[in-house]
Image 1 (cartoon, rainbow, N blue to C red):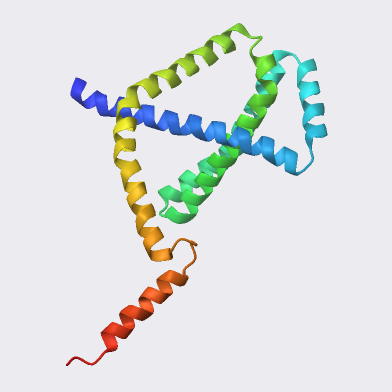
Image 2 (image 1 turned 90 degrees about the vertical axis):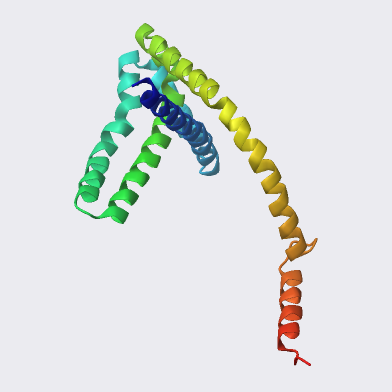
Length: 189
C-alpha cells in the first residue's frame, strides 16, 4: 500500500505547486490589468470598502468567484460526461482560469481582513506549510529536470542560431534551403 501512495503524494504535490504558481501569476496579471485599464481608483475604493466590512463579509467576497463560476464548471463536467470533450474541456479550463484569477485578485484585496479571523489565519499558515512541503518533496526532481533541460535548451539555441543566422531572421534558413535544392537538382554525372 505504501508504494502505491508515494506516486499519489508526488502527483498531489505537483498539482498543488502548479495551482500556487498559477495563483501567483494571476495575481500579477490582475494587478497589471488594473494598471492598464486605469482602474486603480476603483480598486482602491473596493479595498477601502473591504477594510470597513466585518471579516465574515470579506470571506464571502473572497468566495464569490468560486460560487459564480460553479455552474460553469458543473456544465463543463456534464458536457465532458456526454462526450463533448473539446467544448467541455474548454469551458472547464476557462472557468478554472477565470475563477483562479478572480480568487487571487479578491484574496489580495481581502487578505488583511481575512487574517483577522484566527481560524482563517491558521488555515492560511497550513496551506503555506503545504506549499513548502510540496517544494521540498519535488525539489530533487526539479533539479534533475533542470540538469537535463539546460543543456537541451543550449543545444536548441545553437541549432536555431545555425539555421537562422546571427540576426535571428529566416533569411539564412531560406538561403540554406536554396543551396540544398540546387544540390538536389544538379544532374548526376
